[in-house]
Amino acid sequence: MLSPFTSRRSRAALLIAFSMSSFIASVDVASAAPSLKVNETKSGQGRLKLTSKTQTVLPNVDDDSGRCALPKGKPFPKFKNVSTCYDGADNKVNGQEDAKDLTLVTLAGIPDVAESASATVSVSATAKDKVRIFIKGDGDKWSEGLKLPAKLTPAQLKSGVTFGVEATDVLRDAKVFDGRFDIIVEVKEGEKISGASRKLQVAKLTAFSTQDVEKIVGINSEGTKPDAEPWPMGAIRASGSKVGYQTRVITGTAHPWNQDMFEGMYASMTQDGKTQHMRVLALAHRNIEGMNEWFGFRGKDVGVIALTGPNGDKSMDAMGNVDGIGSYIKDGKRVATGRLIIGHHDKLEYGKVSQVTRSFFEVNSPLAPIYLDTSFLSVAHVDEIIQVIPAKNERGWAFAVASPKVAMDLLKKVESAKKGSQQLVNPPKHDKFDPPKIGTVSEILKNKDILKANEIAQQRIDSNVNLLKKELGFSDADFVKIPALFRRAYQDELAKKEGGMVDGSKGDPVPFGPRDEPEDPGHGSGGDRPPGTGKATLGKRNLDALVPNAVNALSLDKERLIVPAQHGPKLNGKDVFAEAVTAAHAKNGVKVTFVDTYHEIHVLGGEVHCRTNVFRKIPGEAKS
Image 1 (spheres, rainbow, N blue to C red):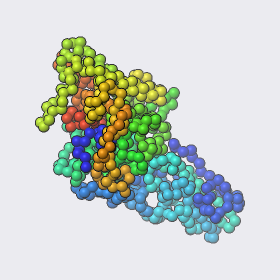
Image 2 (tube, helix red, strand yellow):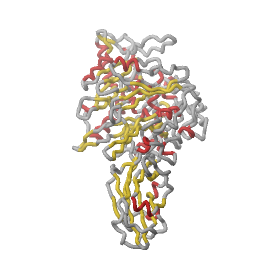
Image 3 (cartoon, one colour):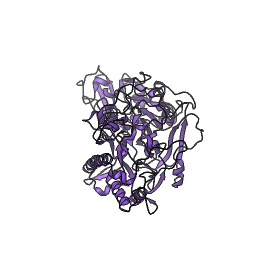
Image 4 (cartoon, rainbow, N blue to C red):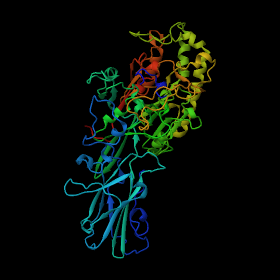
């Protein structure tokens, strides 16, 4: 089991077009009722009417009744247990709240239907094991889930039927199921065959962007007081924010990198003038200590799902490597659902995100994610170099982008003022240890290795910015340059042997052995995989932050941002990095509150964004 002080680098490294038709030959008869022939007759055409107020079907992955709640203070739960208990996993409607998650499809009554009529309800073959249909009874009663294709009685046909439709899982891979399907009803009256279908679509999940934070969420290690505020609530209070928090205290040691655990997403469905929202925590395709405890946040209108499958467990599959872009306009057209940016390089093995992770985000994105090259970074997460932040512009957001050039210019300014003898970083003293000094401003400006590192970083960052400009139609004004400095990762022993800045660890720096529980694909019972005996080989994954990375921040709302304290060199008594960060964000109407990360977070390869995760407010959701 790895310590909570394990470094980030080493922790295992559209709506579909509406169509309703009465038909003879147009439906997927083979999946609905194989015994029927499509050319029997057309005399039933127009006899059936199948309607719904929406085409959207929610993935019913929440737990409205609370029957799946995890007890607090118990040993780590098993993945196979916690991942299979949710509303869409059983064959019943779990109360009135669960019924709100159903898409209602109505078959109008046929008053003159023959008493000898036979009928079936079914769905497209690709959706047969992906969706479930219930029939509404009297009052709030619902049938058990139908075994499809299911028979309908003449009495039901005469009175009419209301179906409730749910998806039993989120969309995961378009090659398997892209969410499009038909609900199909066929009626046979003697030689007459009538049919109707309604096209439906399982809701895609949308990633949050810069929506206001509703609450901070986290997992705390054993020994933490149940009512203890999570980090960095002190700084959040100092910022003037009144957001709340929710934590779980576990039996064992919690992994500290909350952002890497899950990507916050949501789905919405509107019918009869009411919108039903489903928040979903998408757990990373990794086997991380305490991961299964996040299922404890599942509840009413909150689902938790896990990405599982082969070739996961890499640093790049962590959710700190994913960020949501808000709505924007390109070529005069608004992209309402935004986009995703993900660190991934398809041609570099050590720069790849697993296919499981990519397929999940691709099938849930109306527009393809924008893949940025983070393969030059030790941890290789996109939040190390770029992040979506609130801004007072037409969109309401902009990009904060790491700028080694801005940082170097600040150091040159300090040097020219004859203040270069200052240490580059001046963190507060720690009661147990002090990290080695990095060097003075003058020494840094003469350090060829560091200069080369930042030259490479700037080139790679510029390439990513140019890609974003092309994809989004943006200009320089849409990127807030934040001073940042990089170095060869200090964990990399090769740095002591190799001159220059061209090589580093080829993949996640600590090779790992077999998972502790092979039956838990991607999610163990709480333990990391044990360290292996292999040695890192040469590659490109070798840069990390030399000073606290101010890009890696937490946006609270449209006006507040929590940023790592810079502890930088001073001019006229003021931290030049902190002043530059504050001024850059002030241009967008955003107030910065600094919080110290140095000893407990920065030296382990992370910052504010890495250490935190949140529930953001779902757009359009009524205030509670």
